[in-house]
Length: 301
Image 1 (cartoon, rainbow, N blue to C red):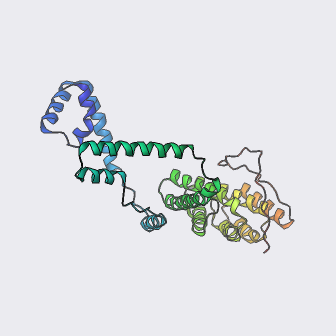
Image 2 (image 1 turned 45 degrees about the horizontal axis):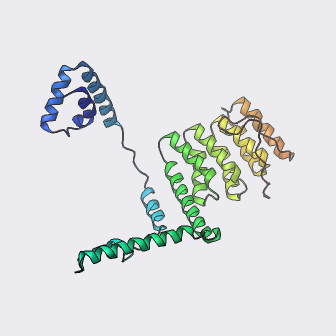
Image 3 (image 1 turned 180 degrees about the horizontal axis):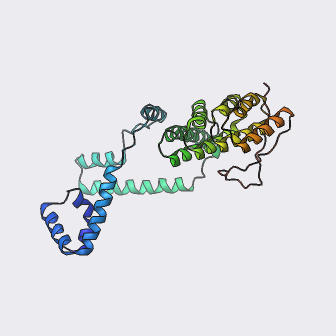
């Protein structure tokens, strides 16, 4: 028994998976080796800490959404004949061994000729594979949407931020994704997640449902950062329906003075039909401060 063996089998020792002889030998070695004693104590602390971690509960929607996604995949039928089956048949057939060897050699020769012909044959036109690529891209997009919906309910703010970032990879988010993002904007306890969600929803503001959801989100915001960012977006969109919710925010007694000035400026800009760029740069934006998002076309109310 040596230190290398002890370090390699500490996990099995703590899990009580070692045979009795090795378990006793490791205990005897650790009792006489200060370095292995320190290593065992550190491993025990990590082991107990891992045992106290709560197991995350999966969402109730995880199972039905997984099976719904699984139902979209088609499994190719297993061929009834194969080279392995042919070889088994030849072995069972009562033929002299030299004949079997000759047949096997001819099969390998035929396979080599066929492979050479296939390698020298020009590939089919790319247009033939385009439907398959499109179908695969649709399946990947559907998988990302299911993953986004699942991660939005994760207790970790980092995972919810990762879920929001998937929105940029979706060509056309469906209604469930949009609804989940609007709910995150209004209810998520983390300010950074709400800011990132607002940034993800801004390019979708051409959708009337998204724009109306953003307007309805105004009275529900309590964070000054989110209030200012949402007011900036309303000014860029020249959304007149946002004026009543903005005025309702101004009536709050606990409203920050800077936010109050910003809301008053936004109401004035919308009322005079003068779009403006954000006055306060968003700290979570990845683009440089000098780049401004292109204003979306106003929707007639």
